[in-house]
Length: 180
Ligand SMILES: [Zn+2]
Image 1 (tube, rainbow, N blue to C red):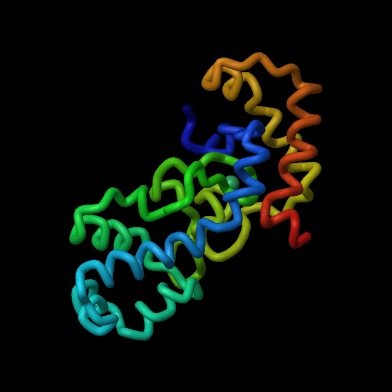
Image 2 (cartoon, protein in one colour):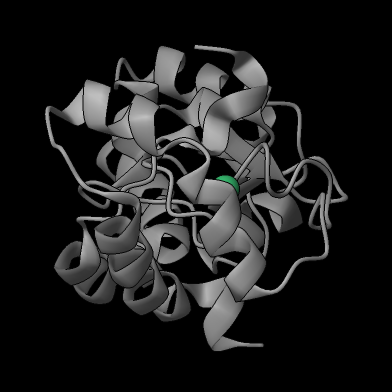
């Protein structure tokens, strides 16, 4: 798959999942950090020292205000022997812009401060802003360009009309479009 086609994984069939779980990735990440720190009996100060950040930074991560950078996230996972991807917490998280499944922390977008975005993929949200200002209708059409790929990957056989119908229902449930 062409790396620039990261939004190709349409995830059109995760409507229920998105409604139930998709909003919670950011808090899950925060909760996981608290969980890891507490189960290791470390204070925020001690935890911060291990990863060369301030106690305030750890406090903000745990409140879900900010998130660690991808490198720090991987360092945390490595230090505590947890799967970095498990830090996402939520089962089957999807990008809250394009609906792409976020299968790995490497697919996460980033905030302007370098912290990962638990909500968006790196194609939609590379550095604190959306890479493209589009309407939800345009995002539907963008995703449809990858329908063949999606069908091939998931063993489905959705026609363009069927997929468009699903996407029109599905994408507006995602965070980016709910706020629009
Ligand atoms: Zn995306």
